Amino acid sequence: MDHANRAIARNPNQPYFYYALALQAISPDGLRAAKKGLKCPKITPFVRCGLLQRAVDHAGDLGSTILQNASSGSKQWEEGVAFLSSAMEDAQSYMNQAPPDSRHMRKILYWYTLLSMALRGPEISSDLSELQDAPLKFKFTDDFADFVGNTAANTELRQDYLLGVSMYTDAAGEWADVIHRLDSEVASKEPEISQEKAEDDFTTWLNNPAGESDEENGPHSVF
Image 1 (tube, rainbow, N blue to C red):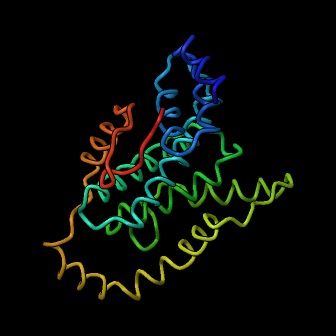
Image 2: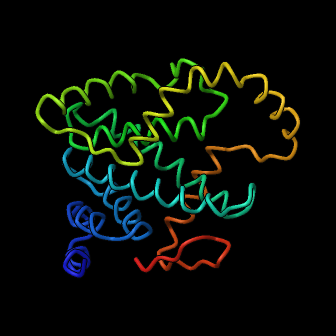
């Protein structure tokens, strides 16, 4: 990390140095490094996809961790939603730009599908048709990886994905009335997820290089 930071000080427009930092740094610093690297000019497809993958991982982990202890509508809740929204956007960019047999495509598809379910909620129909061709991409990627001997690790993220996709259609039908009733009862109390506000919150966090924060506003950063 020291080498990467010194290299960035010498040449702040070289995206590979940010990629090296994003691979090593913990989530807040790694996310800032990935996002800054993505803004560099003349970035190669390999480095761009690598930075997108690290941005998804870091933002997804940060958002999930924050929301575990956040009260609905609180500053922490808004920050967690902002991280997850950023992760979903970068996951979609990776899916559109990376080749289908890329090393991290499976993991990105896990993230994109689960984040879409969590953030878009009622917009997602029972057949998941709104998720573009993510299910088809996953099948191709999974089958190809198995064919070349790259069997997927049975990680928690993969288990969450497989469980969510396999049960979503039946669960959506079985619980539709209950979910609709509960949504109607608490509609005035629950905050809506605004993608525009999430983007603004994330930009504010990203532009705070000193990482100044208090207990309510989320994690500190030294990047």
